[in-house]
Length: 128
Image (tube, rainbow, N blue to C red; front, side):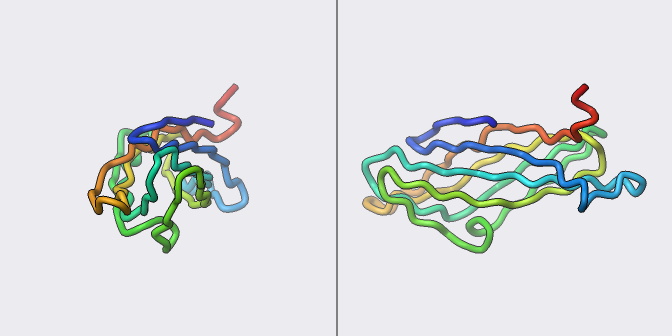
């Protein structure tokens, strides 16, 4: 698991290889990731948008962005956390992701960026 605090928001990420949804013969490798977002600020925050940078070990990369996460824009009061699970498909056995969330301070209505730490996705057999 990797974890990082930026702008008073802690982001923790855990990854899982999804063998049942992968097809190595067709260069399809599926990974799930669980993200926990914790608000360490003294004010409520709302997650507005996400922006991902995704890298395959074959040097291919792509960007994904959009509103909220898994169809919601969670509101977190001080001390609260929100957890969700999503997925990423790669064309190789190894890759990594990182990015940022655009959040809004619900008191001032100011938006700010929260870094999502880089995390690796690796097929377990490649870890030996």
